[in-house]
Image 1 (cartoon, rainbow, N blue to C red):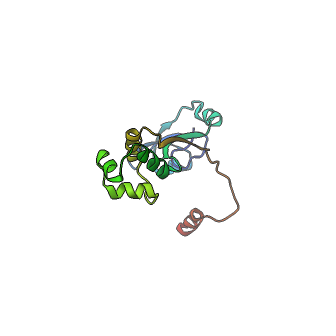
Image 2: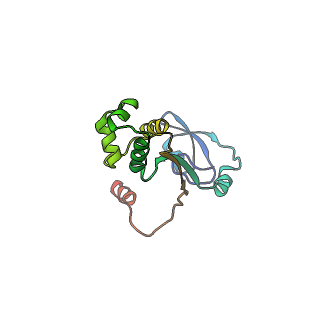
Image 3: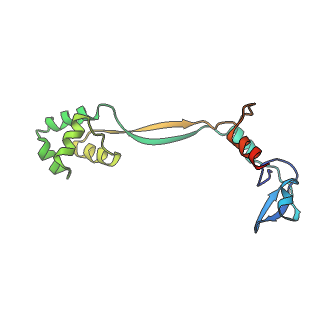
Length: 151
């Protein structure tokens, strides 16, 4: 287990620091009143983190070429921009901007247009996020500057 204040591993003590019950190391225990020793239980989260795959996020995005696709489908149905705008309950100027590519519709609007025209305008996009590892460098950081300033 790690110290709740500084994160260092090792023997931990139960301490009340500013009305909060914390598990802290020997160094951090001086900031409060020690009430006991924390029983060490093997930390299984460390093993899980090592095996964990990169987190992935799935989100909806609007397809490339949405403007041309909307315009062609609307024209194939024989609808004018004004008629189409009324049927989807939007302003004609908005339809003009979308079809010209000057305005990218929201996901909700793209789904609404897609349902009406029976075309797919939204697709799933999967993005992976790898967990970054902390590395020690010999460079000077803002945190180092703050520590020096407090001394």
